[in-house]
Amino acid sequence: MATSRLGLPFVAEGQAQPHVTHNEAMDMLDAAFPQIASSATETAAPVNPAEGAAYILPPGAWGFGAVEPGQIALRHGGIWHAITPVPGWRWFVLDEGAARVFDGTAWRPGDVVGAQGGRLGLGAFDAVVDLSGASVSVADLLPARAIILGVSSWVVEAVTGAASYSVGMAGDLSKFGGSLGLAAGSSNVGVVGPFATYSPDAVVVTASGGAFSGGRLGLSVAAIVPGVPV
Image 1 (cartoon, one colour):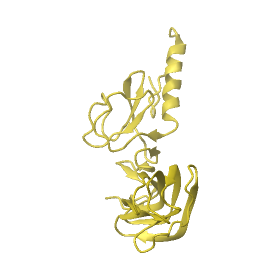
Image 2 (tube, one colour; image 1 turned 30 degrees about the vertical axis):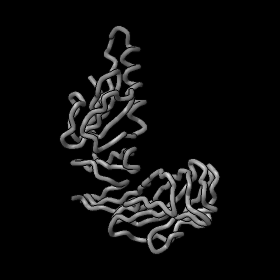
Image 3 (tube, helix red, strand yellow; image 1 turned 120 degrees about the horizontal axis):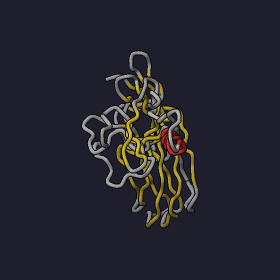
Image 4 (cartoon, one colour; image 1 turned 90 degrees about the vertical axis):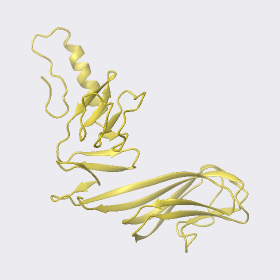
C-alpha cells in the first residue's frame, strides 16, 4: 500500500524492520517536496542521474523505467519512481528558469493557470557571455510575447579593455544600464518601464572607452509571460 499522490509506502501492521519503509518514504518526500524538476522537455533519461533528480516527462520520453509521459520521474535508490500529478501542481523547471503548472491534461508553462487553460508566468532568462571587441550580442535572450521588466547584469570575470560597459538593445544601447563597473562581482539590476515584445530580440553589451579584450558577464532577463492553452 502507498499514498495516493506521491506513492509513499505505508508501514504495514506488524511488519519487520518498519524503519526501512519509513526511511524510504522520508527519502522520497525529501526529494519531491521542493517541487523542482531538472527539465520538462528532455526525452532521453540522463546516463548518470543524480539521486533525488526529478524530470517532468514530455511525450516520447524513454529510459525512465515505467514512468509515463506526463508523470514526474523521481530518481531514488538507483531506480526511477513515478509521481502522478494532480491539477494545480506547480513545479519549477531548472533548464527553463520558470514554472510549469499541471492543468489536469498537460504541464503548461506558467505560475497560474485559469479554468480554461489560459496561463500567466514569471520567467528569468539567463546567459553568461564572453566579452570581446566593441560589443557582444546575445540573440533571442528577450523572449517573444512577453512583458519585459528589466535585464540585470553581473561581472563573472573582470572586464578588461573597456573603461565601462552598457547593456541594452538595438536602438537603445544603454536601456538596461550604462557606465557599469568592470570588477568581478560588480552588478546592476537594470529595471525599466515594462514593455512588450512580439518576437525574440537580442540583448547587446557595448564597450565604452575602448574595446573589450576579456571578461565574462552574466545577464538575466526578468519577464512576465502570458499564454494560451494551445
